[in-house]
Amino acid sequence: MGSGVTHHGNISDAFMAEAVACFQGLLFAKETGFTTVEVEGDSRTLIEKINQEGFGRAGLDSVILDIKSMGQFFHQLSLKHVRREASRVAHFIAREGSCRSENTFWMEDFPSAVRDIWLQRR
Image (tube, rainbow, N blue to C red; front, side):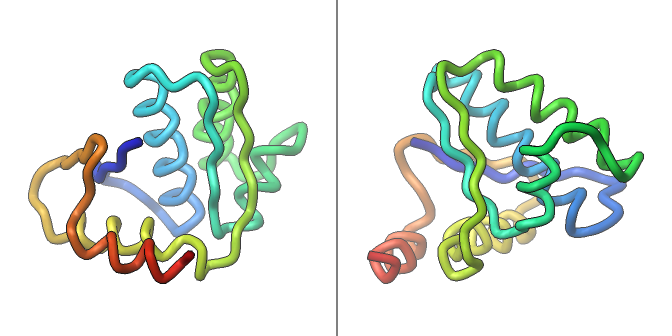
């Protein structure tokens, strides 16, 4: 598995940040050859908007459409809501990435502090 941080400009709010992160994660999964993908997110509203038919907010709609179109590249793609406690690793990596000046990816590896957070989850 892998993880990463990419820097983006013009992110207007938390919903847009979560949506862009979801799309970037799916793009990463596609480019690295994953065929079965499960996305977990702590934004119930965003997960529901991605899973439902139709659209709502204009700025977010294009990213949601991009996320939905990524489904064609996977044998199985599921998006589910998890409580915030379950996404502590993702939040740590996001904070770690905000301290970096360049995009960073970890393949079959991760920042050492993540191991402790992940083990606490078990």
